[in-house]
Length: 111
Length: 111
Image 1 (cartoon, one colour):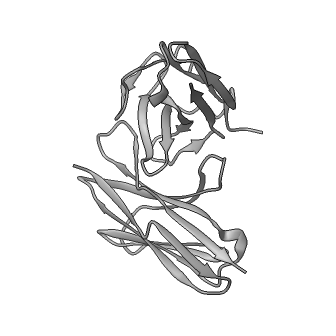
Image 2 (spheres, chains in turn brown, red):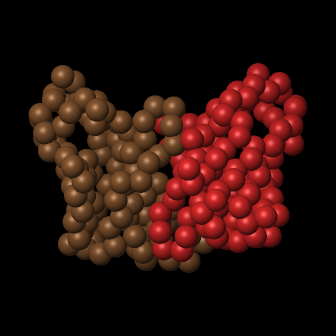
Image 3 (cartoon, chains in turn purple, green):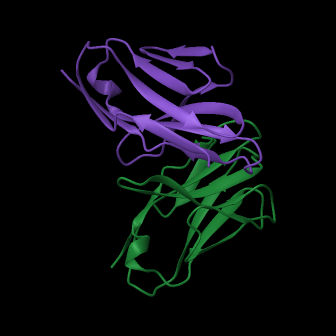
């Protein structure tokens, strides 16, 4: 069964304290891995797409990386405005284009 | 602005009442999806559509029906609402091999 697991469930950081969020997956055929940011009361907002192992994408303080079994979202010198829930999802072959989501990591950055 | 629009944004229903949630997208996307999001459960797929006139069941379809009569619209119906259907509902659309664009959500409470 295709599965996506994110860890930790919640992460509290001080402003400037770098860290990483993990997304591990077991799927039958990966077509792409997606990272989303979700603020309270809003819909998920697209951040990155990764398609093959070794690929990296960056946006401001965020960098996403992909291996054959997991993806990391690295947050460098976070600011309070980075506080949100970060969702990982995979696109799998023969699944009607559906994304399979992890449970998310709730990030809180304190000043 | 282009994107996915959901109506209504909030709704309170009494048990047994019916309602329809509307999702409209103006990006000419083929694929559309309805998810529900509950605390600790993540995003769970209710129904989806791979094109105009087509629908398919997702992970949690019971108690819901959908229709995709026009490419740009995807309707989610609750025939007889139950308290277990209290949730935040998200609609999303996508192109092949791309990630989702989400709507801002509908917060539904069934009392």
